[in-house]
Structures are given as C-alpha cells and as structure tokens.
Length: 310
View 1: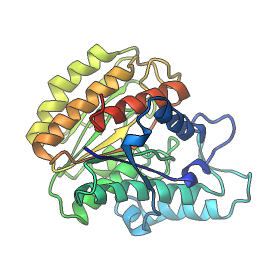
View 2 (view 1 turned 120 degrees about the vertical axis):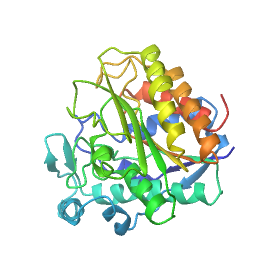
View 3 (view 1 turned 120 degrees about the horizontal axis):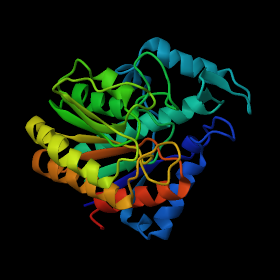
View 4 (view 1 turned 90 degrees about the vertical axis):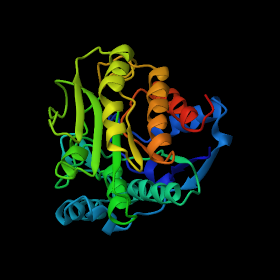
C-alpha cells in the first residue's frame, strides 16, 4: 500500500509568536522522526498545492474567509493580528492556510483516483476548531471538513466518515456537518476541557467525552463499543482522520495518557473499516500535538500503520 505524504514549506511560515505551542517546529519534529524511524523512504512525498477559495467556501462563510485573507495580507513581516486570544495571523498565514486546505483536497483526489492507497497531510495551521463562521483555537479553516465536503459535493461520494482523536473536541467539524447525515463523525475528547462543547447527541455524531487521565484501555474500549459499530453501520466510502496527538501522556496541553501504540492501534482499526467499506481510502490530516518528541514518535507510529510497515 502506497501512502502519500503531503506538506509544504509555506506551512512552517505561519507562526503566532515564540511563546505559542502551535509552532513551525512541529512539522520539523515530524520530519526528523520520519528519518530516525527509517520510514521516510517508504512514503510518496507530494507538495501541497494552494486550495481554491471555492473549496473553502463550501464550509466557511465569505466573511470568515475574508477576515483571514485581508488581515493577514495587511501585516508587515514580524507583526501579528489576533483573531482570538490564542489564534494569531502573521504575514504568511493566508498562504499557509491555503496550503493546508489544498493538501487535504489534493490528497482526497489522489486517493479517489487510485494514485495512492491513503495519505497523511503534515500541515499547519490545524483545522478542527475552525467554525464555519470564524477561526478559533489555533485553527483558521477546517481542513478535514473542506476535504470531506469536496469528496461529497465535487467527487460525488454519498457517505463519508470523519474520525477525530485529538484531545480537544472538534467543535468546528461537528458544527459544519451537524445537519448532514452523509457525514458520520466519531471522536473522543477530554471533558470538561477546551472548547467546552459536545457531545451533540445525534445519530451521525458519535463524539464521546472522557475524563482527564483516561488512557489507552479506556479509549480502546470506546472505539470497540461505539466507534466501530457506528462506522460499520454507516458504510463510509471514504474516511477522513483529524489526527491530533495531544492526548499523549507527555503532552502538557491535555491530561490524557495515550502512547504511540494506542495511536497505531486506532489507525489499524480505522483501516479495517476502510478496507471493508471504502476500498481502503483514508486521508489523515494533522491537528494537535505539542510535545515535539511525542508528536514525532506518534505521527511515525500512525504512518507506519497507514503504510503497512508496523
């Protein structure tokens, strides 16, 4: 199975200040670990294109898009514009956001065309907190939501699933598809915790709150008991992953205790569903993960599973 790896240098030019945990070094940590774990040569590396604005507008309002484009475009090098207390723009943020969304859409097209079996997008800014009407929580545009909408409305799929294993609830993704049963969303998230939302209690929203310090045993039980039955019942023709790694026990932005093997196990379970219903078609996009060492190791475990190397 060939796994594509999408990224672009523009994604490292977006930054929100030296203090900010969602930093360019995250992508470099992933690159370093791919070399250290000797899997870099097994990936089909591809450059993320710029997204068409029309693709973003399938999820986000024109005002939300214009706010990012215009404020970022007005910034001088080294200046910042705050969209909220922890979401900043710099002069490169618009370009980075287009690359992030463009990677997700291009990966979707490549997987649907059969060019690769699945894909991982090593991109930033992340996306799953971005509401249709506004950026928030480190996120500018909902990359996974944009890709899922592309698969449905442009490529003609009838059913897709989004799996989110970030420590934070993917409130933006959930809001984007709240009234669209073509999209099954499954997640777990620490609760109560930022962004203090969810679950939605809808048949196509299996978003499960867990307590702080929950670990692999609890999460695996939730996957077996709740995610997998819902995914098999939905029969998705493609699966998208919001791959956040901040539920790792070494990550200070959450209080869960997952380890690399848990991420590999979750990935393999998703692949089994994709193999049965979706011709193996998976597109995974980076969300959270802020301890650089844990992030690199966790992404490597995720990619080894996707590429069948584990």
